Length: 337
Image (cartoon, rainbow, N blue to C red):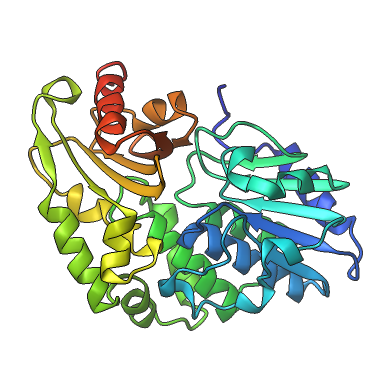
């Protein structure tokens, strides 16, 4: 499926009309993906706060699966909008979906797309094209870029709460403004967000530079077992490691502490591709992949039912960790750019 560079004027107009067609007292449900990251939560909660500024009084925000907000995001504005999946509006008049590339990432909430109005806001090139109105911009550095644009078209001015949510989303998905998607427009948006009075230093310390001692010990152990395969990816090299549920139990840590493990792994100079395989069930693994440019890892992920971007993607694998990595290694050679 080939996506345009961004939403058309008609799609923007349809999204604005969908929001304005709903009454202030009607039920509105915001949904992001399972195991939400900074962009998923930030874009969703920031938009939810914007709806409040428009006068909406019945707004729920939720995500599928275990209702746990990752530690770095427990002070994010708008958390009072969050409810567990089971308590989310069952028959909302409007559903807005954030940072979700395929309906499978909505779990048991996918049925809410049958609402009279639905709008999907996303920036994944692998987006499968679902929902009523689709605001999908593969060139956007984060879904918060799309959410900010829609709020602007709705006439909602930024305040510190909305800005902090969107800044967290933007900073996490650009790797603190280090990744290739960090364009002049990204810095212009960051400047507008900071101008509301938020404190980037405090936010960055909370999001990137703070964590429990057990998480540090766990990270050291998992990094210590990393494997470098210099012949993989057509000789560009692949470095990979894995973490098990036993590792989490032994160090007393929740699964979200593994989300940033890919960052130190991807720094290995001898490898274009970095892979982290994190156990989520008896024979189930969450696979995170990064590329420095030689391989389109989203193409690899999509063959396994996942998705993402050319330089960052993931999927769910099954079997033993080594089996999952062997599959990745084989597919890498088929998707060299």
